[in-house]
Length: 258
Ligand code: NAD
Image (cartoon, rainbow, N blue to C red; front, side):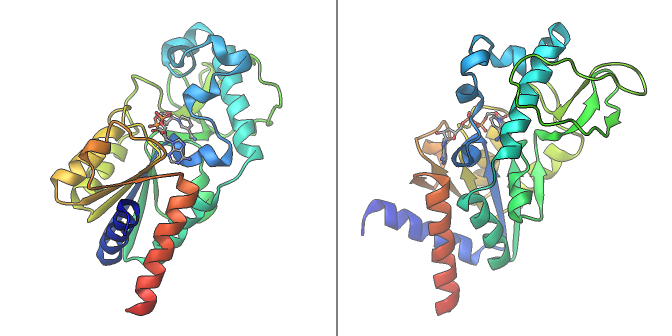
């Protein structure tokens, strides 16, 4: 038996007997759908901007059209693509185990689209909107533009401040209650399956460490070693769209033979 299949067996075993599984996902989870990570996304027209300009309050205040245009471009990408086999496997796994919660850093809504029913969005959702100054929630039917250039945001109908995507930018707090629930889940889960995150963005990056120190088995799926890899129990190197279906197939086999 090779190291990789031993790791897979260990992951399948831990997942099969777990009462609570947390699947913690990052940008790498959506990469096979064609959604670039922030770094990958800074191509072409956007290459000259860094995340400090595109994903901070200050960047938005300095140039709202630049940031709104970039998010509109990303919304267009998300609208034109769809969840892949890995998202489907997470939704399928939910039906095979006692309790499974997805805790995601992604803002694309793909887990819900694939059928996962309990998804905690740490960083918000790109298809929700609020105003900059007062967080007034805004219902907006923003046309999906093909244009990937600057675009002026509409004004809030209540206070006039610019409308922004309801996502968590660098330096902002997570929505009330969200981090608390994520930490509770990390402390009480039996298995945390960490998929496609570099483990560099806090506070999400701390959750696997909380889980491990609380006694959970931490399994990581990533194409490359991350900042978390040395601290997990099982590292499964590979693409989410390949490895997650393998895990689910293993759990299904175990169930069938039990
Ligand atoms: P990251 O870009 O820092 O790291 C991505 C990780 O995914 C890397 O470790 C990489 O090796 C791995 N990876 C790449 N392709 C993979 C694949 N096919 N299968 C498995 N792993 C793969 O992403 P992060 O850790 O999520 O942090 C970046 C921040 O950017 C987050 O705050 C997130 O909210 C935001 N973001 C979200 C989206 C989205 O909603 N889809 C996209 C880009 C960025």
